[in-house]
Length: 160
Length: 291
View 1: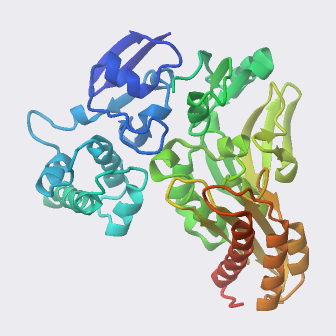
View 2: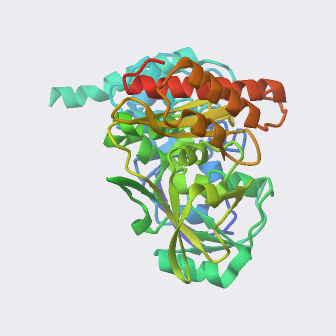
View 3: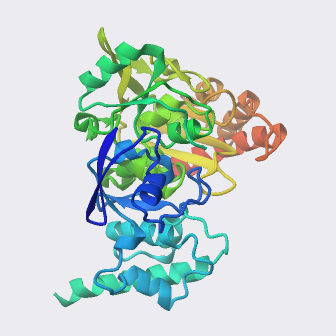
């Protein structure tokens, strides 16, 4: 079947089997391999992408057919014009990654978390990221990074 | 880990979905949030020949909290979790549940009605729907019917929805101001199925006695189940530690869990009683009653 899926502002029109999962569409058809496949069973959150700017979805648990007509943000779309997104900058500054495999999912889950809750407590962050696993168990710095990102992203609003 | 091939059909209205479901009968499955169905298909535990995707049906993406609470088939768990009214004490049971289903990312796609239709033995919404005496609105060729949740949940992964029918919404009766509930769930980690769980909803009468109570267990048998004996024991009684203990014992006796990685039968039966007691105490505390 034909699908038209917008990823990071680029429209991808492809002919796919209905059983093609979004994670594999992004990796194999769009060649955007920043979306990682970890457990492949909806447990680990490595494959999280943002749908229509508001919803974090596990791309291993959604068919590309369902994604037809929708817009997605993947980790490749976070940085703008060579400048890291505040979430990326915060993960860099706080050393919020060790091996980095879970990082794209962590950042995109955080993206939606901060959209819904711009000033989260530590508990809010830990709860919000509970669907994302870090096998390096580097959670402490991930939580710090999301805190820093939240602060940085509130700045423009405060200044205006 | 790749699902078996299937035909994908996108429905834009409930009527359109129904037409496809009637045409394909037992070969078709409804795709809503897909958070249980897609993994099941990936493990090839489910191999539907046809998937009817109802996500584009805007008419079914609603939550109405006027008197009765009605949740459409495409409304996400996350929408319930973030609804402004959910924090009112009378909706405490649903609020508790909305925060512990699966994990926070899964909840952004998962639907309440889909979870009821999936009827997993360890489901959360199923137990809550029993305790709150919900009914499921099911549409078919002959029109729409409301099915009481106890009749809706038939057996593991089996409901009263017939081939060619579509569950369009779940309706929770309007709780009055003297009603509160609680959901108690023990899970090894976020996102795991419950080791044991108990849903409780209590309504007090003007004299402080228990006017109505709903008690249900999850992960305690083929599917979530009402603990009718405990409800009968409590109804008409003043809340007390003894009454709560008797209700908990009844729940423990009725629980029929399976031993697995999460625990032994003895442990899970014990846990069922403990969680019912905790749920009752928490629900009563939310009504300002210590027992």
